[in-house]
Length: 273
Picture 1: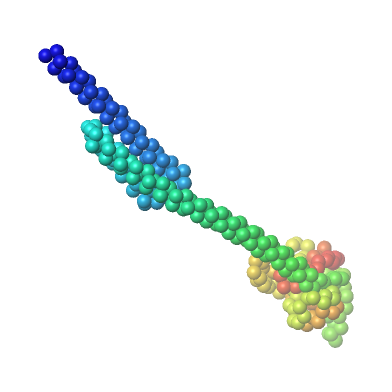
Picture 2: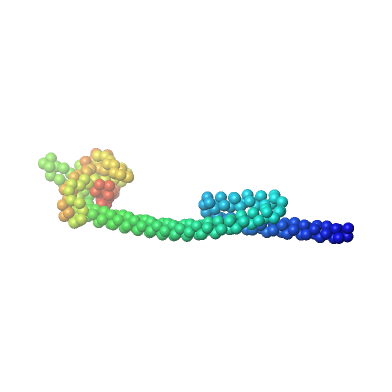
């Protein structure tokens, strides 16, 4: 009986040791599976990968971990889990190699995309610069091609019955206002017919004459008289007569403005007594 008791105790202790050892192995298996899951999480999150195979492998390991936690440790089960872990580690190695290639390809694409973006930005900057240069050149050409008017002078005149024109400085005697000027020479200005507008403003700040208007893109010009001239890039003397009514002619200073289209090209004053 003593021998049987010793044998029973020894058998119980061996069994207890085996169970304890199996529990330790089970815990090791759980830690390995948790480590595999962390490996997959880090790879997927750090590189923002949406690879289906990586995600699927991580989910299978998660399911297996839950199964291990719920299972009772036994030798056969421990061995099966160990075999499964070996297979999962091999699968991880293959998947991570493919993921490394995918990450490298993504980085290369990102570099190429950034390089393309930089080239596009540089091209846009160049285009904007060229556009600004063209606008500046066009504006310079536009200003250079404008025809200037010089030597603008105005005077009141009397029209005799025989058609003779006589100057006068008295507002009460005048029949018309005459403005004379010279269009300057300009080789790059477009030649051809030009419409010139004369604006005469009396001392009461009223426009005298026909009081008509002409509209351009962003401006309206009110004028006293107009005339068409044929400009051939050489100096051209021009005079414009303004028909005025008696109430419009008063004593004081008058302002004369000449417009070539919408552009004011000359201004001057005259005084009537």
